[in-house]
Image (cartoon, rainbow, N blue to C red; front, side, top):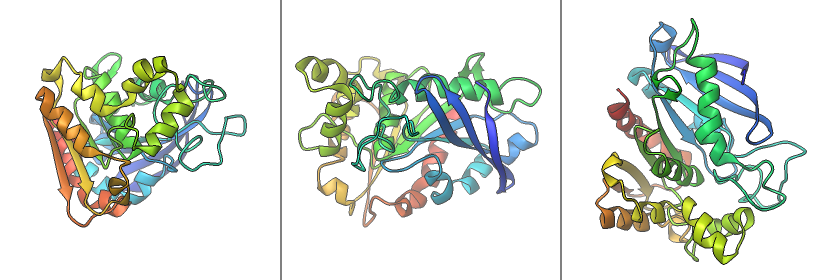
Length: 300
C-alpha cells in the first residue's frame, strides 16, 4: 500500500502532493492529489475532505480549477482528489465520453468487461482510506487525523457524477464520514429521464429486474435517502445547483427529487439554487468556500 510521490508543489503555505500507487481493488495504478495544509506542515494533525470529480475528469481537475487551497489552508483541512475511474491499456474502455474510463460512477461493476477493474465504490470507501492511513497517518511523520486506529476523520463532497458518488458513499456509510455536500449532483440516476444514469447502471450493473431492484437502488441518492431508517445520523447535507445548468434542464440532475426525499424522511438537507450559474468549475469556484466551511464545522 505504499505511495510514490511524483511531485511536490508549495501552495498557500502548504504542499500539493501528486501521488500514485498500485490499487488492488481496481487492479491498476491509481493517481490522486492530496493537499497538506500549513498546519500539517508545522506538525499538527488535520482532518481530510475527499472530493469526487465528474464525468471526463481525473485527479487534477479540482486541484487545478476549484481555487480550494486558499480556503483549505485557512481552515486547516487536507484535501484528497482521486481519479474518476481505473485507467490503462488493459482496462476496458468505451468510445463514449460518459461511460468507461473517466466515467466510473463510483460503483462496483458486475457486468463484463467492466467487472474486473471498475470497482470504484470499494476503492473510495475501503482502499483509498487505508492507503492514506498507512502513508500519512502513521509513524513519526503522521499528519492526518484519525477518529480511531483504522478510521480517518473525514468528510466527502463532489460534483455531478462525483456529487452522486459522494452522496451514495455518505448515505451508505454514515458512520465513516462526518459530513457530505455536492455541486449539481446526479440525484436520481434510476429515473428513466436520466440518460447518464440509465446508460451507466445498465452497462455496469445489468438491466435485469433483479439488478434494477437490488443494485441500481444502491447507487441512487434519492432512493437511498427516501428509504433511510437511521435519519438521525445524517448531518446537514449541503447541495448547490446552478439555475442555468443545461444538465439540470435536460433532466440529468433532478436535484428536486433529492430535496423531496429528504423532506419525506425528515433528513437535514439544504438545496441552494444559485441564479445564473452553469455546470462549470466557475460555479464550483464561486461556492467552494461555503462547502469547505460546511465540512470544517463538522470535522473540527
